[in-house]
Amino acid sequence: MIEEKSIISAGKFLKPHGLKGELNVLVEFDSAILEEDYPIIVDIDGIYVPFYAESVRPKGHFSSLVKLQGVDSQEEARPFVNKEFYLLRSDVAEFMDVDEDEIQTEDEFVGYKVYDKDHGYIGTVESVDSSTANLLLLVRPDGEDADIIYIPFDPDFITSVEEDRDTGECSMNLDLPDGLLDLNA
Image (cartoon, rainbow, N blue to C red; front, side, top):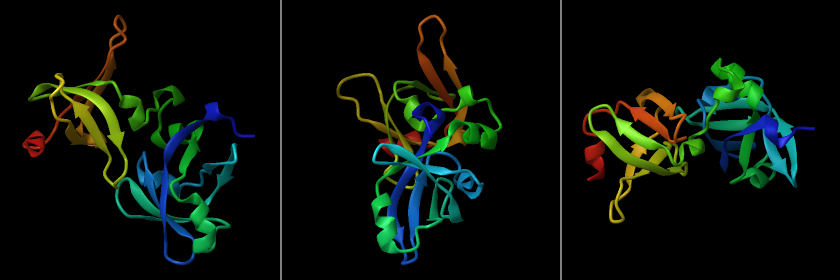
C-alpha cells in the first residue's frame, strides 16, 4: 500500500488527447521523469493507485502527452481529467540525483522572499500558477496596492534557495533575463 508520506505531487492531468487514451499532462518536474519506468500514482477514492506510462511524448519542458497502460480510449481517460498525480519521493530523488529531503515542488516556494541579482528584493511568492504549460511564480511586492509580478518558474533562473536558521525566513535568489520584470509594468 502506498502511503501519503512516501509520495510527492508531480503534476496534473489535463484533457484527453485523441481517441486512444492519451492525456495532456502538466508536470512539476522535468517531463523526462515520466519517460522513466516510475509509477504515476493517482488518488482513486482515497487509495493511491500506481499506473505506468505506456508512452510519453514531450510537448515542452513541463508538459507531455502520456498514454497510461490500460487506458485505451478517450472514455477511459476522462476520469483522470483535472486529477493531480504523484510520484514516489524515492523515484524523484533518484531521477534528480539528490537526497529525498532536498526535493521541493513549486508550491513549497509560497511565502519565499524573492531577490534578483540586479534588482534586489522583488517581493514574496504568493502562489504558483500551473494552469498553463509554463509555470509562473506570482510574486507580490510589499504594499497593499502593489500589483502581482509574474515570473516564469525556470530552474535556470534560480541561483540559490536559502533558509535563515535564526528567523526561519526562506528566500529565493534569481538571475532573471534583462527586461523580464519590465514585462509586468
